[in-house]
Length: 314
Picture 1 (cartoon, one colour):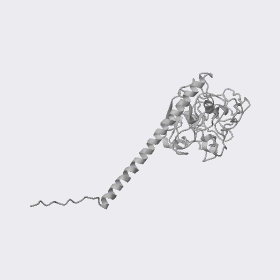
Picture 2 (cartoon, helix red, strand yellow):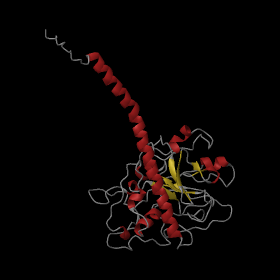
Picture 3 (cartoon, rainbow, N blue to C red):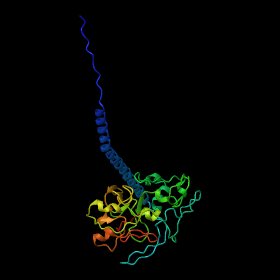
Picture 4 (cartoon, rainbow, N blue to C red):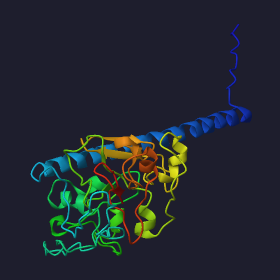
């Protein structure tokens, strides 16, 4: 007698089981996406730190042949007596691209001791013009900025002009070609040098004033209620907009005089927790004066108040 072959029933997912699997996958995605986004931002910060560290090394190379100083464009200076508050002689706010020069005429953008309208970004561009650094080094990957694409950067003396437009290699406005601020080099104090206090901040991610002052976007932040010991969330509006957006910045990468760069959740770093985006409010003394301070404003442009006063712009 032939054995009876038992028929196998094919198993299949029920609708409920499929819905459960889909829900689990959706839950896992919702959990992983923020983590992936966070990982990307942390990777961008690492690139940002490498950019600023590279800037520092380039400045050190330049300074070796220039009395330990970073490049400072020729400009009008004013003497300051002991105990006086320095008076600004250079308007640097809203001046990115001013007297930039002309393609094919390398000397057209050079300045003299009578010039009073100059940007701070001319300092960074010097490294590009002299082939110490590439233009892409000055773009933070978290900022959305685009690097300058001039074929002959040696013809120019600054990043793109502020009102440039059109499908040209230099179509991005100047302040969108440089994501980093530098120590304000105008005035008689705290010139950016490589032989000073190693803990002094000399460059960083673009500060909170840049968008309003350079492009009239948003508002200028007021003096903070926070102090250097307060939690980081109270400093969000004072942090760089590069990492988190205007008004909600998570912090900034800071370059110090010894050329190392690191991320800080507050702008109060370096010598005596100096707020790197403002000048000291008063003479050297109480820490709160260094923390609150005065930021650059349209038509004025503060300058460092003391020899260790970090004031980074834009």
